[in-house]
Image (cartoon, rainbow, N blue to C red):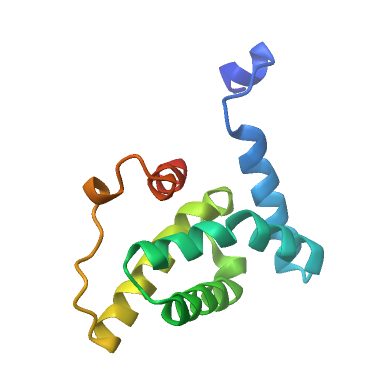
Length: 129
């Protein structure tokens, strides 16, 4: 049975972007460097912003970013919902930031949503929720 949106010829907001992300994930999984570079260009900023929002120094944020992308290379072919790559990266970067915080003994409080109100980081985080 066809989706009512498809039969009406309309698409939900974000359908095109989700399809493009799914396609990029599939191509990157096949070794397409250009697709991988597009994913990094598209989502690199959010990965970095998550790490910095947790109060990490730039060198530690860079580690979180590198590990997050490395983990993606290991899971690229097994993502259950490749169109939700942004959410996967957000969660993975957040877990990695917490790991680095514990490992390095950071005492900076974890940034909550209330601390980010009005910030561009909060806007980016909500875009992937």
